[in-house]
Length: 301
Image (cartoon, rainbow, N blue to C red; front, side, top):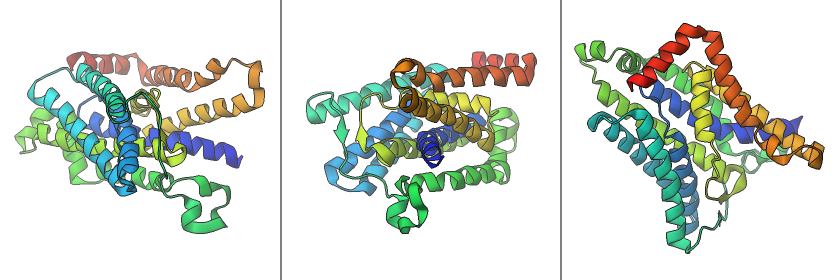
């Protein structure tokens, strides 16, 4: 049981961070399909920064800076150039995937995997043997529930959260009381960039200590789906992300148990099947009218 919980947390923690970034963007009125690109940038920057300088803090700082800059680029294209947010987000994903591949080839001369000399601080190194088998988990896993609760408080119990919701849902009303929807979206996307950097760093340095091209494997899109499945609520969307993570952990466990008796690709596809099913169930539970409204919002953007 401990192994299953550890696998779920390892799989789910990066996904939760990216999902929260999507929640922030959604509250600001933007459906952010650039999460995948920002996450892969966080993976690459944290590993390359660590390898090139030997400093973990530099790697994390580089990841945060680049992800925030990517988020600002998305804001500029959407707000100033009036581009479609869906297309702009997909463009950002393509930029992230291609840019990280180009960076690795420019530094190492080939599309090789980059191994980091160390990873994020582990619970075992901090608290000793008292944490038992959970000592292999990184510090970002422990911080994850606090980040979820903190974001819920920020969005639901503060003046900033009210202004952000107004900017996303009723921008004209927000502007009439002196709140700039454009500025609120910039802040929301920038905070989301920080969360994507943390999610990417956890994926690359939390357990693997490696960067490989395309290692996010669609987790950014799964995070976007978790936002829809969770209704844009920080806690609900986080639970949706963890649900996808449980399915992923079941797939990993099934590979060990069944071996060659079940096709390997089928087991790897389980989290993505769960993602599609979760979005479908979410639409059914909210009813046809709500699903139509969401589709209308996407067309408007």
